Image (cartoon, rainbow, N blue to C red; front, side, top):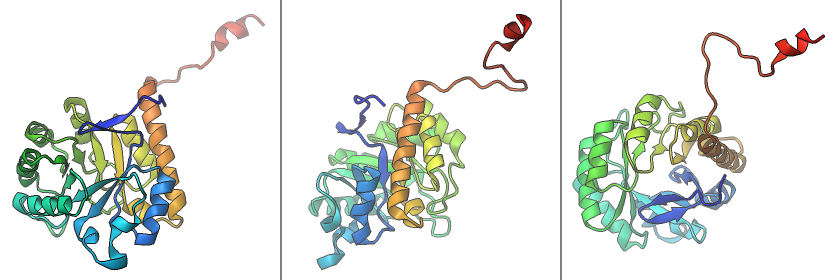
Length: 258
């Protein structure tokens, strides 16, 4: 991979394209996963940053990590804005992952309220990164409202089912001039690699690593898979030929000379 291949979000440069969702990790495991995954940006729930004593996740974040507080628990744009303001007051910075969910059964994001929250938070100087159902029209509206990146789900959150929405994500990648980060549903390093080969800018993972037998090794596997997928995308994948085989070497001429 070229050293100059930085990921730029809201004017900030990152070398790593692996985004960690920290919600399912124990506090003492967070640092280990971040270091093995080469992570430079990690989400955190504001309630975990607002805890007293040993329960404060900020105390377990390695130095230099960019924090991405999320608005987990918000059901409306107004609630998301209140959570974002609290995160800023706690010293979490200006990045904010907008997560607005009213659906308690399937945990699907509310695109309409999310669009509204993007505009409100952008106007307050935040760097909004909206988690959303992969819909091109909604993605365009979020971009117009001031989103710094678009974060469509690959499949339902926590499901580890992979990229079930690949066709819709591909549309967003092709049509939106912002980093597209697949968030939710990625269950295997191979699926993270697939997302990167599609042209996504980064991948967010949480459950897939937190539920692995060896968490540190799985974090490293995701790191390598994301790097490989990005390298493949930049290299330009080879053609696909349907219905027949094509010899990799010109054997006909060689046999005719014998």
